[in-house]
Image (tube, rainbow, N blue to C red; front, side):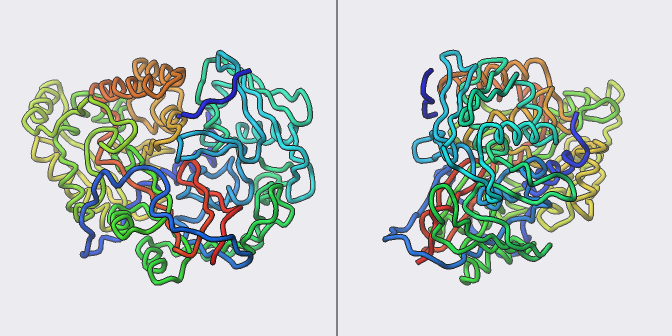
Length: 535
């Protein structure tokens, strides 16, 4: 065996949960008149930033965290595993088999002892730590890992289809060994064990209405007051020793500006934000925390199915070339964030030399005229949320599209559930504000889910055999140089296909106070708190 090298049809309930995450990930800010100045793209690089010097760990205390959103259930098979949607809480309860380290861009053992792969990257062998127990006292052994991952796939989690398409079998040669046999070469398979599949749920947790979170993490669920807060208590029997903190209190303020203000006024020890103006303010203010770049974080998906305007690729290309993302950023966020019409911002590790389709209203108008000559009536409905920033975005897009010959009707929905229903479940929309969200570390899983023809989160966007082949090639690539070349070709194919209108990349920032130390980063804007402390 070779040791791991450092690098890179769904049930309705599961689909709704994943769609909710997509909407949350693209929901907009407060729309306050006072906005921070635009951030420098060079400051938006994924990793730990402005970390304060720390002394010896101290015992005790409760860390209060202002969450971005409240997860419906703390089950990695039912809730998308990301920092913005309950990832911190689930990582605290379940831990993760593997974690991603931003400092050297490597995947490292966490709850597991080791992970090795065969020379052809088709057999992966996971070795577990001896003596690890769930909080209910049952062993976290190979059988428990197999059960949890099979449960994850059966319940239709966000990466369930990717897993089932690629993993042919899970075997347990002994109590501490799990072997994954893959159908194809996959050098970055290890990232799968840093997210939902790597959060091992005890058999006693159950399912559905009887579900209760039972894991082997550093904390256990103590109480939950819906729409208000949840409390986690230290697991004194945690495999790596009792955590320093007595507990974590997660509060749900349901307003990003209120959460940010509460953090600034020291009412919170930590908080999560992803609004461009607030992320800019935090980065410029030298707050310490974990910053994550999210490509395609701000987009409008285009329904390319028959009967919708976007079924004509000329219409999709015309819409793309009609819009200037910098104007959208100025109108919606006072110029904050990383506006751009390419898949990747210049500071992304995946930035390449391939240019996106340009802002070119004249070329856009010609394409609209061509489509009209073939029977297109020019009518498009643009759907988005009704908060101030989403409204400004929609009005700006409407003006751009009508300037090149479209006739645009706005559909500003009043609640997230309606947005989910129209885009993800019924796919009854023409163009809609959304989040595709490819993060810097291990992006393949999200790429597959959102834009592979077999993915489960494509929501009606244009897919193609050409893009599928590029994704498959990316999956099999062994080096980041190979992957970067493929990302350039993905941008070229995007220019032809235009599955969505790109407004820019977004930053996600999980920030903590200067008296908080020992926070460890991982994938999907998540952190681990088993070694955290407050001085």
